[in-house]
Length: 183
Image 1 (cartoon, rainbow, N blue to C red):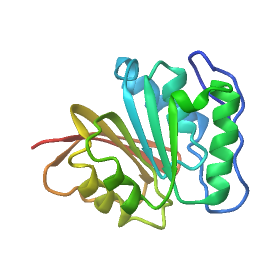
Image 2 (cartoon, rainbow, N blue to C red):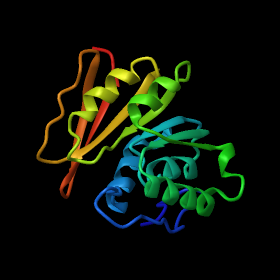
Image 3 (cartoon, rainbow, N blue to C red):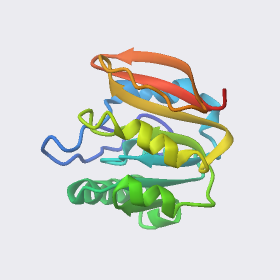
Image 4 (cartoon, rainbow, N blue to C red):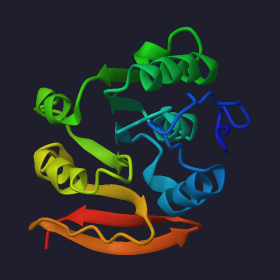
């Protein structure tokens, strides 16, 4: 696993062992950021269920201004901090804020902030977490924001009222849903 492109392109990323963290594959991450294209530069990014931090760090490498990464797993947060140091250097905290807490506590703590790109990639066994997180995101989403849901290809995620599906792409066993706020 590595950063695909941008100022940190090619730098390796660390992932903890075990089933609790399922990093987005390099292929899927590369496709995702190619689709997002120019939306990344200058963006404020929120990476919920961040795991290794690969999505937030890829966005920062490609020119996002800042990112917040949320994960409740101790090993995931350790990996994220290690990866942030490798990708962003000693002053990584200036661009990346890591919240080691459950998303149900973390998202309300961000009240007043607005994000242009939001990644939701919970463990696949937590299919109900998508709808719960989307409800919390209602006031954190910038007007023209994109929300990306990574899910198991075989599972459809019903969107709560107020969100619309823009596009969906499958990569191996995973799928990416591109979502926007509004009807």
